[in-house]
Length: 350
Image (tube, rainbow, N blue to C red; front, side):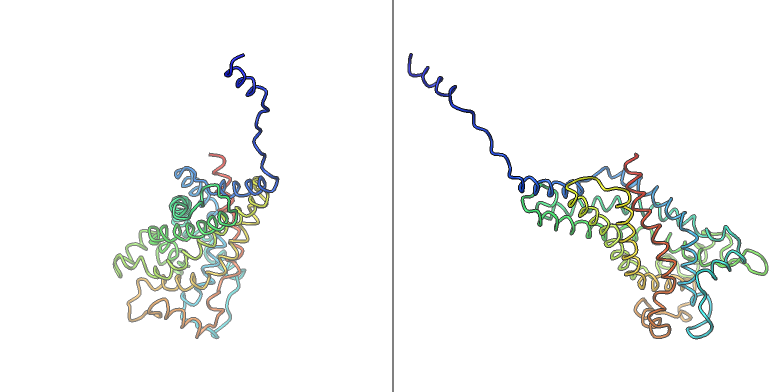
């Protein structure tokens, strides 16, 4: 037997090398990091937009009556010359009863058409831009979209991308759709019945609002309160969209990649909706009061700007003045939670 044959026999007889298996802890850690990455993988932008638009329209129509009562409570002192201490504030049930008695059942959905347009567009754009911004941010954060051996680094980067993308998405969407939100607020505050005894201010709906504001203030009239609105919506969307994404990521992470139940999704959505809505409510109150000044001559306006509005409300009405209508808003947070859960559900169906 020659030398080459002995080498071949030696290789054949040699036991095969078996790769070393990952220790249980390493495999568990790998699964956890993989679950974080899986929850932050991008999806189809058009699918995000369509799911968000449909979810927004459904959720806003469902809670439109609560939204109108909340607005009437929030802007009680903007409708009349009544100030703090002059008479008793109306409660939510009293306002709802007055609306039904004076304006009829359908009045609870007054302003809902621009609201559905706005919310459908807002939700579609929010989820579209959030996914887009998340992808852009993840490229700047090392290993945030890749499987990383550092579990804490991957989770931290995922959280940062969620909060930042949520805030940026909200700011971009508000900048585009703010005039529609403005018209919706003005229509919701039109408390007339449409009769000679109780005429409506904007009987022609959105057309009359546009004509009135354009005639008085021009294009900038549709952006009354935009500055404070931009600040508020960036904070709110970061907490609402980003917070929901973060909680889902954490739950999936702890469940080793298992999918979330619908109960877990709704509880998470309700928690972030209540927290974000309460934290940002004073900003929303200031924004809406500034909105109500559009069309009024500048010399007759109560508030010069958002800071002046905040200081005057706090001085004349106390901190409670900044939280008027918070009760109905907390009830309305069910709609915000429904938006997030509906988005997940519709996205899975299409």
